[in-house]
Length: 239
Image 1 (cartoon, rainbow, N blue to C red):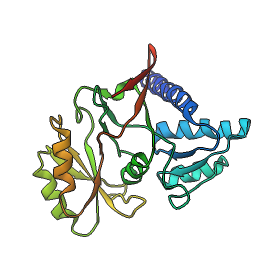
Image 2: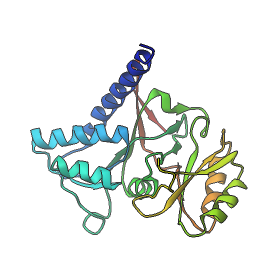
Image 3: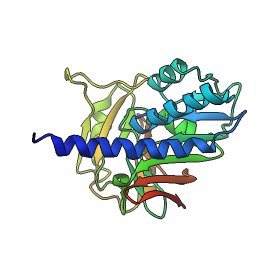
């Protein structure tokens, strides 16, 4: 009985994500090259997009940001393309772990796909982010750490250097069996908790300057629009 409120809250969050995802795919038109995000919210979006492909005969080409998203898209008969054939995308749609009001700066990467997500996002003419209202924050880092993707060799050295960027803690992401989590790119992730990030651009520059860092989960000056699903309905945020 004690789990009922939690289950109800989780179901409500899932419904909000589904609502935002459904609205987001309205941006997708026939003939477009589309970037597909990764994570629980993106899963709803890919499902909804697959339904449009099935019902409307929508003709698109997609670049997924993870092996999981690629498998989901293929199972729904969404055609997969690549950057050789489509160097620029018309639109990319993804979720986020945190969205800063005003700037629309993001923290992304809890799903482990931050590098491919960023490549796809910066390759899109329009980058649409879909979230539920719990992801909106005044300051980045309020609830979520910043994932940093690094090469496996010498990761302990990189972890020590990341701690000097002002992080309260830096923890290598691990699987349930205790082994290091590996991304689709065969890299590892260090989750750095800053509690509150006062200068996101300066922090991003410090992190990326560390040799061994591949990229980080700070998405700055990339987002075109955020669709926020909440109890009062859908809200559109623009920078």
